[in-house]
Image 1 (cartoon, one colour):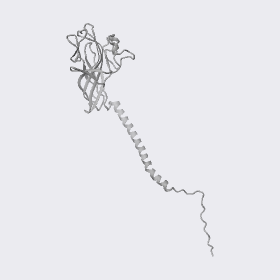
Image 2 (cartoon, rainbow, N blue to C red):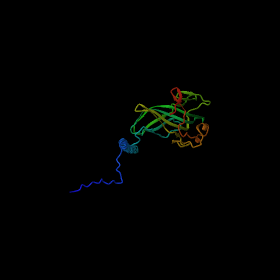
Image 3 (tube, rainbow, N blue to C red):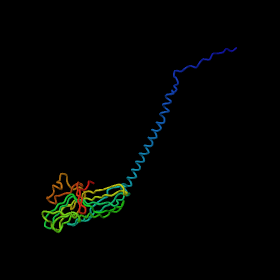
Image 4 (cartoon, rainbow, N blue to C red):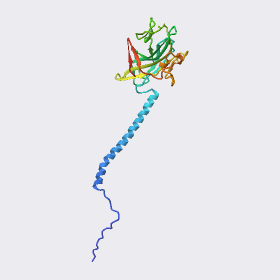
Length: 267
C-alpha cells in the first residue's frame, strides 16, 4: 500500500509582493487627467510659439519687401529750393503702410521759428505758431504726393507796416516794408485723421530747417540744435547764421484759424 505523503506548503521567499492599496489607486486615477491636461497645454504652447514665430517671420518679410502692414506715420521730406521771400513750402509725403490709407487728414503746418528782415533791414521774429492747411489723402503704399505748406496766408506784411496772422493784425513799434527776406525758418508738418473712419490717429514730422546755412538755400532734416546751444528765446536778436532749430516739436503752439487764435493741444 502506498503511504499518503503530506504535501509541504511552498516555501515563502523573503520578498513580499506589494499590491497597490485602494488609496494609492484612487490617487493615480485622480492625477491621471491632470497630467494629461498638463501635457496638452505643453503641446499647445509649443504650437502657439511656433505659430507666432512663423507669423513674425511673414510680417518681417512683408515689411522688408513692401512696407509696414500696420498704420504708420508717413514719410515727409521738404522739396525744391525756395527763394528768400517765399512762405509757400513744398513737401513730399508718402504713406508707407501697405494696408491702411490716410484718408481726409486735416493737415497742420507748424512754424516753430521764423526770423525775417524787411526791405529796410528791420527784423521780425515769430515763434511757436501753427495753422490749418486743408484736407489731404495719401493712399496705402502709394507714390509720394506733393503737399504745400502755405504760410503765405498765415503771416503777411500789411500796407500799414503791421504783421497779420490769418487776418489778426499785430502793430509793431517799427513798421515793416515789403518784401521781406527769410533769414531762418523752422517748420514741422502734422496731420489728424481716422483709421477706417473710426479710430482717431495723428502724426507729426520732425523739425525742418531752412536755409541750412547762410548762402546755402537748402533744407536740413531733423535735429539741428547742438547740445547746450541757446534756445529760440535766447537767440532772439542774435545773428541769424548762429541760430538753429529746436531738436523736436516743443509745445505749446498758438493755432491760427480765420480770425481766431487758440492754444494748440499737445499732439
